[in-house]
Image 1: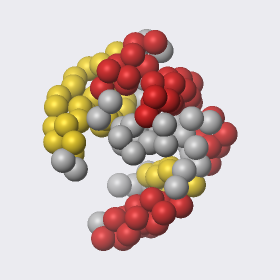
Image 2: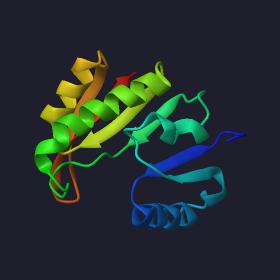
Image 3: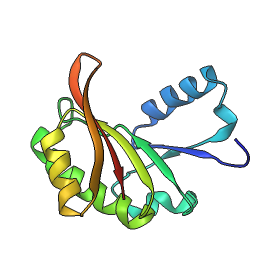
Image 4: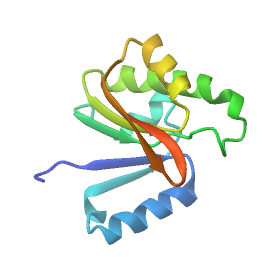
Length: 132
């Protein structure tokens, strides 16, 4: 699609390698910039264009997170950072911890345009469509 680029950010090099394999399989490897980084830190986004219109993400759910009790704080920090960096962009996200996500979205005045339940990897999850 023109000169647009996609960015894939994950803190785990292993997951970045998996994402590269998915992009290769989907024949879009050359259209994606892969970044190993922490999405709760604004400096991670220095490589991305600030002219971002759409964001899709799959943050940790908490089930396999190193400390599930930290998920609400993680989501709050993440939502705050994403909104600061990409205010006005549209975001689609999926989570298995919807209460924590809804609290984070509410805290930073991110309005939910639509949400619906799905099964994702055997886990009941919720997809949100929001405007930052």
